[in-house]
Length: 232
Image (cartoon, rainbow, N blue to C red; front, side):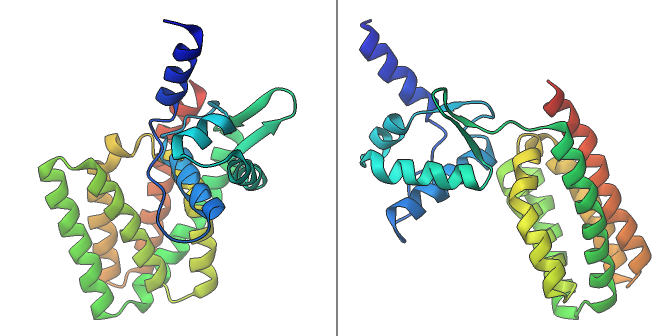
């Protein structure tokens, strides 16, 4: 196979993890959204080199909005632009993992405790619905749905805490946390159902201390599984 054709084939293969662009907002915003999600979800791998020309060809756009998007992703810490060397997806690091999840464990515990103390019957019913939906998804072997429901479960707990600053802080950490745990979510998702059920019981009983402990321990136990991913 000619080298040019081989290079084009390799470039196409390296971008298979990219989603289609959404139909709203500006082109750079659309590109940012799909590239960020591909990085967080693992479609673009840590350390993978990105070529503006290949991305532009993949989406049928010019290089100008792609380069603008790459600069924005670099500023946000998702990629690293190395002058004269290229552009690369940022690596996962043990230091960031430990620091990020140390803080997240404390904040998730805090949110769960407040949710237990402040939850309404409507919020409790919605949490119960998500847990039941997770069990159904597990029976079907739908790991993607399990991961989606896991996010929904914790987002609802943040809302149920009725503290906008706490909720916004956790929401701001969510994408970075997903960057670390998305790769192992399919293997751990079914085990998370038991944690969700235990946390739901604590919130139902308005046991703030137990809810705090369960939520914080869940985050810390997840770190152990992620640590092996980062170290290899």
